[in-house]
Image (cartoon, rainbow, N blue to C red; front, top):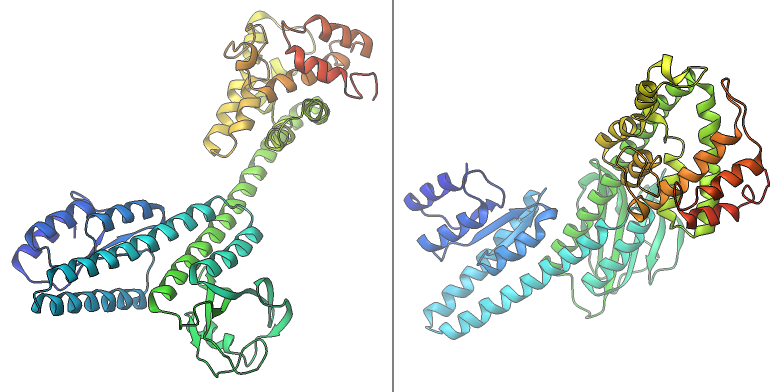
Amino acid sequence: MDGLEGLEKVSHDEYDIIFTDIKMPRMGGLEFMQEVRKQNPMIPVVVITAYSYLETAISAMKQGAADFITKPFTFNDIRHILSKVIRERELIKSFAGNGNKDAVVETLNSELYKKLQEINTLFNFSIELDEIKENSSIFSRIVSMIARLLKVKRVALGLLEGGSIESRYTIGIAHIEKLPLKGSIYEDVIGSKTYIVLEVGQKNPFSGYPLDSEFLIIPLILNNEVLGFLSITDKTDGYKFADEEINLALTLTHKACLRLENNALYEITYNNLINTLKTLILTVEARDSYTKQHSERVTKLSLEIADEIGCAQAEKDAIRFAGYLHDIGKIGVRDIVLLKPGGLTDEEFEEIKKHPVIGDNIVSPLGLFPLERLLIRHHHERFDGHGYPDGLQGEDIPLIARILSVADTYDSMTTTRPYRKGVNHKTAIGEIKRCSSSQFDPVVVDAFMSTSTGRGGS
């Protein structure tokens, strides 16, 4: 059903509550909600959204949505929303019956403010989690987030290790090396794959002593398997965990698990791409054994220059990876040209000049290597603008490409090929100095001269 069909049904039938997805064909969820409110402003509308659209959910709440729910959701989530909406409707009816309109407005404003605070908190936490790439950092951060969200003194995140639980990330709870899983309450959580609240007086799963405050256990579920648990207790206000608080904690925990899953998928995809590129490199190396040795030396020298300049870690990582790939485009050059033992004709040189673009085209569909692509495409540009393939000039040429250009040229000049003898170190250094500010960036040349290779080392 889409928004237009929904409006047709609302106009002919009565509904106690309406759930609408934000993303629908023909008429989106927000427009549908506004049209419903025109027909009957008393029907509560709950918007359904993905985590990436939490900002839209905030907008929906401000425009009159009764609540929101994030995908994927469970029956318990629906039941929780229904109970809240029903309570609010009964409250409105009781006030309306007494004619106390000001009280109704004040209560609704209070409830709306509270909901907006909740969704803003989740939205901010969501952004924070999306910026974390290391899973260990996500585990650590979710513990502090839960402590802030639920206002508790003690939180522990334990991961399943064989038949035990190891609490690696904690706040206010002493580190526990191993907690046996068998016979513990955590076995029940694994079986149900849902949260459990232990009441005051029940046994503390960690110490075995009676609890003096509620103890909330939330499973961490990845690919429908429990990988660990959040153990939460000792609320600073001394009260029990409210349904709204538990729902917020579940939403945040689920978001963290999605982030963990995305990181795992990214790592798998990244490794597959790396293996594919390595295969392509091996193909080039099989055609021309010089390429492998040349790429290794150029990468090493480029990293030395980058250290002298003080490049950022991301730039050095790009050099470390793309240095081996900088000539990958030669896979598209004919053997008769690539392996020619003598000098190249103008036509053959034009074919060789295509390899940076071919290399860029090989890497670009992968979508994960923006810096590396710049190095591969532009390592034959000249500082004076007379290079190829794009004729970039000066600092318009990416720094990592300017660095590799110097290293590439030095190694090419000093290496003996079947069709020519390599020059000695002194001659190569003189040529690089001569071409400073024309072919090469003078800052990069100065940095090169400060490396062990530039000073005459190995």
